[in-house]
Image 1: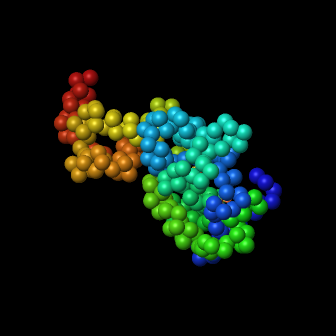
Image 2: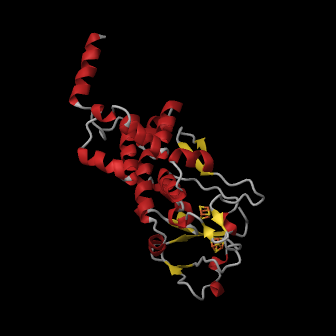
Length: 274
Ligand code: SF4
Ligand code: SF4
């Protein structure tokens, strides 16, 4: 990190001054050579913005890594040009602006994760925030703020940037990645490679997950409400929520799904015959 960058704590009602627009000499320079970790909901939105299938998007635009707990970490892949620019940056700005990821929306503020860990907080509403001022980012310089509104609280900024739906969907994913399962037994539980792959496929590769649901006997085996089936056919956000239910059922044995009675009967019968 550049030594001249400054980070400071922001209280929820404290105002900060910031304005980013095409007229700034620094326009687009921050979309080069950056590490952006993307969540399942980011992928849902970004591939919507690109028109690619989830599988194509993941292959073309991301790098998948494995974290300490066997959890997938997905990073946006920069291009190989000399600036290592983001594949979505154009002279006019972000080509998927309406569907840009959470991290690009939040900048220049971000949650103070050390605070979150310290207090074992689960809800983004309780989070503390930091603001990072970079000398190269002219959005902090007041004399560039003649046209656009430039004073924000954290809440105002999040509303302006359309963060609410991202927070809501990401919070459900955090309930998986911060699940007690990982901290049980002194924090030694981790996903084996089969489970890590299941999590990645179900949450990040939603088109494949949808095929798994609708092109197998899934709904003959699991007792899923008809309204839910109808919704997940049409609504990708509902489909992602359903993938979280499937993962919690499978990884943590939670009762987020139910087997049909006839499936249970068959299971019991095959156990009796063993
Ligand atoms: S003001 Fe900051 S965020 Fe906006 S283009 Fe310039 S460097 Fe990027
Ligand atoms: S996704 Fe858009 S806003 Fe984010 S780094 Fe790429 S071009 Fe910039």
